Length: 306
Image (cartoon, rainbow, N blue to C red; front, side, top):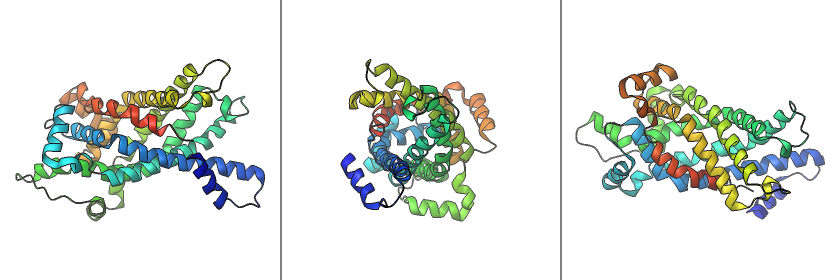
């Protein structure tokens, strides 16, 4: 995979560029391609459980637990139902991971300017966490519209069932869903829940990169660097980072799903407090189970970029 990426870079990289500029461009392009490949791996490893998560978050009265939600979805909608929203999920994850890892390298260099370190490899876990949080701000703008379409496709059956008693089986795809949103809500409709997305992504990626880097640090033998720990430990570090991410920010993800699918309005904290008052604190963690099950292999696989 690394040889393939190097070949792509060699083809598209101008040969007359200054060596320093070329090296910086090479690093950014590697991060971008690696993020794209990581996003694809992320979707196919965990999409079915992500569907279960969204259904449990937005329709807790219908779906009480992970197993029953999975079985009911499979019984009524088949495997396609479990993988509903895969296309926008692919777009969302490729965009998110590409922008994230692309800006992560840039933000790491920005953090270097405020520290005594000279090289990115010298940054401590806190510095990497700050860089991850800054990078997450930018990827929120690419993630919000694609994830909104994904969530609405995943919860389409339940949403339509609330409008019609006959539980219609005719569904629309991502293009029709996007067209419907633009027609009824305008371009702003695609960014419904953006504030909740930013509130989830920035602190979430601070925790993710912090947890990942701390795990790498703990797993690195004396005399070696974290780049030399091997694929198994790299997957473990990524998985631990993913668990830290979702455990820390999950209430904001519930709020985001309610705002995007159920149309809950009024801002992040009013929606959060409404859920807390009416449904209890555990409602803010509906869907955490399937999320933790899928996040370890999904984030671990995503972390295996060159």
